[in-house]
Length: 161
Image (cartoon, rainbow, N blue to C red; front, side):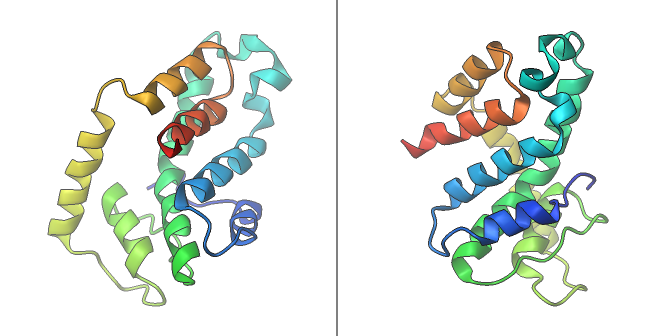
C-alpha cells in the first residue's frame, strides 16, 4: 500500500503524547502534523486557486487514506506501550493494518486472510454510512476551501463529542 509510511517527525510527535491519550486525539494530532508536510497543497499558503482542479485534493485524499491505518496502529500501540510494525507495502489495506497491529518484531507475520477480508468489508460499510456528524463537519469545512487534512481532522473530531 503506497503512502502508508509516516514521516519520522510525525511519529516523534505521536510518541511525545501521553501513553494514555485517547486514540482519537492521537489520530487527530497525526493528521494535523501531516498537514504541515505538504505546504504547497495548502490553500491558506498558496491561495484558493490550487483547488481549481481536483488533482491536488485527490493527491491529499490518497495520502490520508494510505496513512490512516498507520495512524490508527500508532494510536492503538501508544496505549499498549508497544511499537507498531512498519507498514508492509506488499499487503493490501486491511491486511497491512492487521499486520501493523500484530507483527511486532516478526517481519514474517501474515494476518489471517479471513480476518483481513472481514475488516475490509467493515471498512467499506463504515465508509458508506451516509451523512453523520463527522461527515457533515468534514463537508462543511471542505466547502470553505480549507486543506483536506484540516477537513478530515475536523470530521474526525465530530464523534469525540
